[in-house]
Image (cartoon, rainbow, N blue to C red; front, side, top):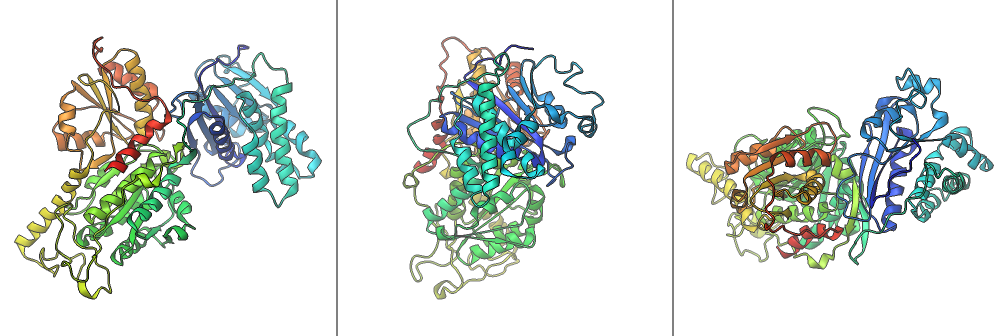
Length: 639
């Protein structure tokens, strides 16, 4: 096919190759360039769990997808407009993601007989007609990279490693993106290796120049994109793990409390430890424990001593932490547990995303052991959600589970940097006078006990996992007392709802179909509802941050709709929770593929269940720019 790529306000690009080809770096640098060009964006890093899978194999393919453009972007896109594939395996694995008419750029020399066998192909897809529905641009990227860098005296292996920057230069030219940020990264990263630095700079420039001079306008031309309608505030690109780290740090400042973050490495939760390490000056200490149980016990010990303990893991590690989590509930100590969900069960697919730990978070402990549970909906939203989790933990002297997932942790989007002074300080229950109250006297606001630390002679107390007397804190086996303590622990979590803002409609109209979701499905649901509203359907989006307890007005809000659709990356866990707590019937839309929802799948379900909207029915307007995400920040600041 010779027709050029269609002109649009936004485009989806997917880079793909071997795990060692620098695909994630290539995508990150294109993301930064897009942000500097004034575009809104959303990314999807997609890579195997193996550190270095065999080169050229299908299961060793690493990919990075980004949607960027001059409009509000909430997803990395359903189908790439452009696929850049470094080898046959990358092309084969990603071909099903493409729609007819997409542009495929391939490294021509990588399609050798040996590479085809490694990719389990019996014929060359560049020659057997299987790509007839696509625009194919064959570029000898490997050879052109070697030619561009041969002056710098690198060996063949090191020279070939520069091809990701050659290809990056070509795609930056294609979308008229600046090269300055990528060049600066190269200069900084390789400041002490002049040959490698200059070779990568030369490769970046050569790829860009190739686009300008190759005279391939029939298939490869520039596609400038207008700037997005961003507010006049400072932005940065941020991943969910980065935003969580900054949010936890900010929460420590707002509560005037030092944090001790204790964890054991596990994908995809490890990135949070990486980002928190080195923030000693901000009052954050980190501890890598020998296992998951040691990590949560150390965090509980920190909270017992007067610091705020925070721990993090993914589903299998959260399972190991469960007994100690019960100890924190019994001892009534503040604790934040971050669960970066991944595809399971067991080891499952560590680098793929899922929302399958909601049952575990709400129900998954022995005895009646309720804890507050909340979930973040996007990378940027992690900042405000982390602050909210700490606020609940300190107000109610309880562990809190904060749910994120692998997609949110690794993906990035634009983040309007908030004014930390706009957030209300976070109060805590540390004694403010020598003996103003006993440790087990509780405030009416959150039913929280005092947060007395060892060494305080005025508040000596005993605490542990064995049931305690509700008045004195001493060990008690009294049946009536155990009933009273069980009721108290439930009432404490129920009290959290008194401080929650009313659940609002994100966008849409009341009376028809309510699409109720949580976590990382936000972006796909947002776009699907937006398009369905444009199609004249009566639909609204309701996205839950607080999952236990649920917002107090949720029952009344949902009663105003004819039907409720719940899309989830699991087999129906929020659906179960809504039936359990609200006694309502819901329609389920479930996916457990390890990938985020396509917008098209959610939109098709909406079209099946939503009635047509009456012409006079008002539709709630939602600001179609990135600052719409600041609603969660403003809501938190006002709480």
